[in-house]
Amino acid sequence: MSDGLQTQVEQTLAFARYLSWADLLRNLFEAEMSREVDAPDATTLREHEWRWFGLMCYWYASLHVVIEAWRKLGFSDPVIDRLLAHPKELRRLLRRYRNAVFHYQESLLDPRFIELPAQGAVHVYWVWALHDEFMRFLAEHLSAQVMTDAQRAELRENIEAVIHWYPYREVPQVESIERSVAHGRELLGRYPDDRSEERQEFERSVEFAEATLREGRQEWAALRADRLREAGVEQDEAS
Image (cartoon, rainbow, N blue to C red; front, side, top):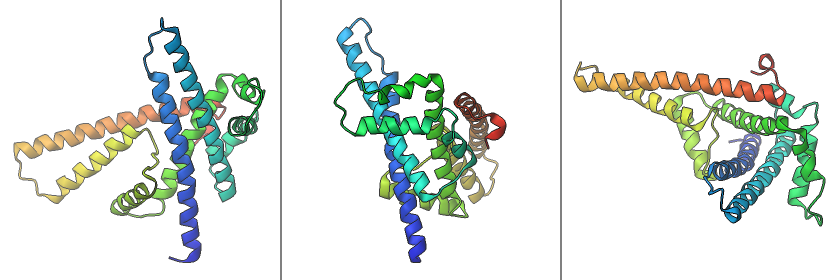
């Protein structure tokens, strides 16, 4: 491997590392937000609110580190670039939010904690959409480096061995079904059709998984389009 290629690989893995940490924080935030809390218990409710707020703060702040890496590496993507150029200057507000989180502030009422949320629901959709598009971009970028499914699987294993994480283009459930379908089709192609009931049952299972995969992708595409639209990126401008 040439020095230039080695540097490119290391830079991409470093970018993936920061995105993986942001993704970890988002997952923790989601888990806390979805946790059932006994509402009449005021103390438990306050603790729950403080936990999800803290996790949200660190997720938002860590996402801006990903933006810094994106710009430093000179990556470009039409959807992400449009999100970063949002007319409400949400990227600038996220940078200020990051500074308020990661740099000690003497006041609890630092305005930088307020400016971004003050933009209303659009900032929520923007953060979620930006995170998802970073995941989608990195998955496509890594996939483009290889030619075959076997190489793709090897690349995934190698990256997971280094940072114990891998990005997904769509929601994890869709990616899981996709791998299951690919494995099923590989098994069917490896062995001749003996017209046995077991094989026919397996074929039906693979076909059902393929139908589920198509439905899941349609649902994900619709959710992505909704988030982008609410974040300020029209559907016909998103690829």
